[in-house]
Image 1 (cartoon, rainbow, N blue to C red):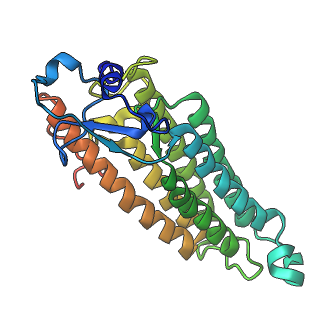
Image 2: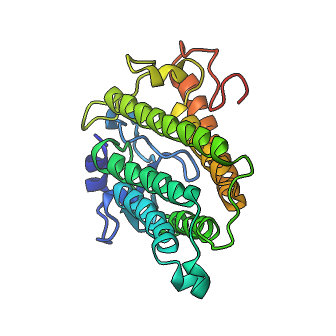
Length: 281
């Protein structure tokens, strides 16, 4: 932050490993961390006032975390699809249903899109996150990637009850949701000039997929949720449905927090918007 270098210099740390991204500066021992945009002269630091520094522990870059998170489930799922003999033995020679191949394409498309967005689209407001979170996040994504792939690509997998109608209807819904998700990410990127932490109220753009901004604060999460609903219905696979529920729960928490911050930060924030599900949540 603008004042962090000045404050850091006055504290004269002897521990070299306490680099700036590892520090949390605050005015109270258990108070809220100062924003990266805080200016020193606004802190009203008088003689005898204590500035507290918390060690956040080892940090890792957000981009690195995202790349690890998304590469893992792609590989875990494709192992079950491309090398089924490693898991199922002789039964792996049984022919796969068309939906199994379609599911592999959908899964690969989603995570390749995620990797592309991480490198070329996202602008991260925070540089790092705690190193241990890398293992927690990767465990979640990698574990579900293998878990879902194991059952969808299993020789005894049962195709959807309603056949091709169910498969191709959900396939269309999945790809429309994926396009919508990317459209929102691109719109959010354009709201923040490179190298800044500037925040604005997001509104629909000329891209028709951004119309959800009229109804929710986090339409990227909405589209993500819709994608996995369609994937779960297309494959009719319980592990995929569990992944959808777990993902929605976490995204709902994030969306509610961001929605609350939007309303607090912008007095004229649209009151009709919900957090993630239009008219409901």
